[in-house]
Amino acid sequence: MIERVVSLEAQKAYEELRSILLENNCRIIMEEPLKSIIVEHGSPSSLSPRDTWKRVSFHLFPDPSGTRIIGSSSIIFPIPVNIITQLIIMLLVFFTISILTQPIIAFLNFSAIWFFTTGIGTAAFVGLIATLTIYENYYRLHRRRNLFLEEVFRLLTQKAGKLK
Image (cartoon, rainbow, N blue to C red):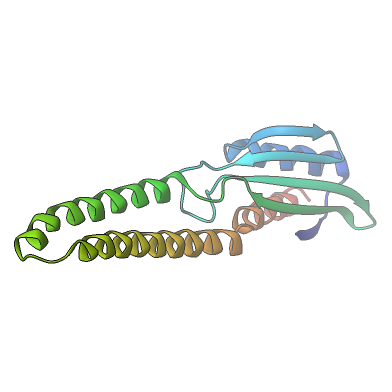
């Protein structure tokens, strides 16, 4: 949650905020003129903290020095499509390697227990990599989810300075 006070009256602050959001390809989900606006920004396939798919809300309140705006941002889709695609490709590669090594293992006359443990080891390894990849990317995205929010406030402050 980020809070800023802009030196514009509520009507002008709302109009400028709305225009900045529309210029940045935001989809308006809900708006209550002069009070709040909720938008969706980004895409599910983005791994960038600025462009990840998120819901951003702004609430405007009158303030003696202008308008106080409280903004918050939350990620909508925690596992971007790119990560899922990479994990599926990794799984297919490990599965292919496992299948290709089975005849070699059989030729070397290893026991059936070896086949079983090789499969479990491969599955555990893929699971560990998948879990770590998802956690690292989600943590990075979640930690920097307010990047777009900060950019909107910076643009709004700049516009307020020019309009004065």
